Image (cartoon, rainbow, N blue to C red; front, side, top):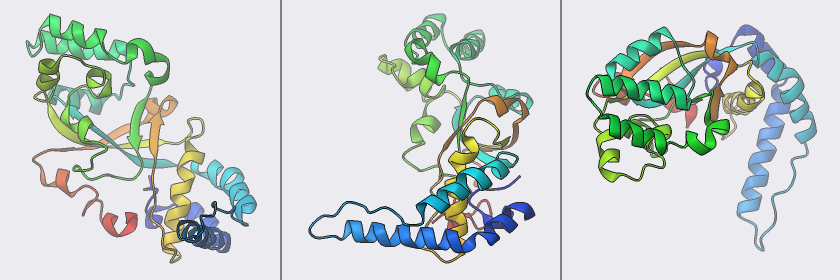
Length: 264
């Protein structure tokens, strides 16, 4: 298992591959930095020019690097708010999002008398799965570069039980407030493969940026959202960081080791 943002974690095969293409990576990223600086500081305004190393860089990224990454297992991060029994269940099996799974979760909370049946019905009726099930279902969303628990992009996910499938279109303000009291914010570390369609190519930008940083280029691994679909059956929940634990606040600061220096 590797961290895509950390070249020190790469397999020997991956390190050898990137070492052999270091000049191309350096040239492309240096040129990209120069062109972006020129673009932002142009007067009068000039459009961003094309990178003269783009063709060779893209060919390497698509045809050489991505096939290697498709065979690689990585660490991904999932931000959510969970009840204790849900954490235990996720250690046993990771389940993709769907209206059916949301209903199962709500049924459990009704049985626990945490929610009323009427409240559960409202959440089901107003869930985005009702009209967006085809694009939302069957996925577990993660990020490949860890984010701090204070990051504004993930604060709604940590703040409200059920994630977007429950709160996104919810019109009942009192019920929305109740979701904020259920469970505890959690950061999940997940080991997963990259054989899902396009995932290997999608994350290759982060690998190349991380390697360019190692070569001395002023670039930080940008990361991306990663949807785990077909690979979910072989994915594994490795560790859960719960709000109140020291490790929860340490994520993306001092944990994993060296993360702050490598992703900024």
